[in-house]
Length: 273
Image 1 (cartoon, one colour):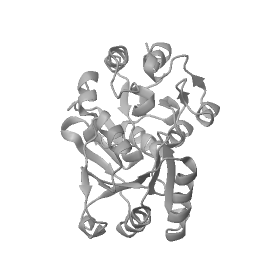
Image 2: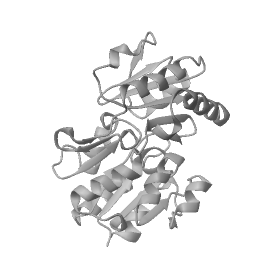
Image 3: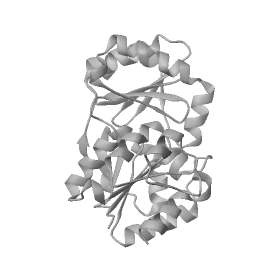
């Protein structure tokens, strides 16, 4: 019996326009009514999906949880109470950021525990974020000292091509020992840097352990490469129909529906209800 579902948001649970469908929301409510945890597991900040939690009837609920920043932060939804903070060391985050900031093509994001800051925002990236309810503050200068006393969850860069993202990864790994980094790609636009050992999968297992849930009792749903650690860590890895081929290759089930066709409702109806 599955006791927890960990689920990516963008391009998995959410429609392409950034909205949560009524059918997916109803299925999530039915699953939680049966005592199954539904845990958003996103690269985004928890602040950006509070309205979606409201529609799921999970907002500000005690004993319900969310994972943000690719595993950087685990929260109880009631009061958005942190229960695990897996932040980057300051020196590491600074080196990653400065590498991104030196590239004029990149929009470089710094995710602190509660606020997203962007240096050199681009119109396309800003529109993508705004469409998903993600608020941010613009960094006027690449001065990283302002973050010295903050928890830095992850640093990412938006770049227009995969070759540019891979080149950014290579540039960062010249400045930071690659063994100290967890690097993923997402949404066909980002290269993302967390500290090693921090990813959607490690956070899923970490939360499961806190709740007395074994990895074999967890379903994970995703579509992109930053979801792979999550899918590989659980008992039932699921790819939505629009998932990358590499995601489908590790999934035990691939939905018939894509993210615009209530794929999460399909998963819940098949394996939970």
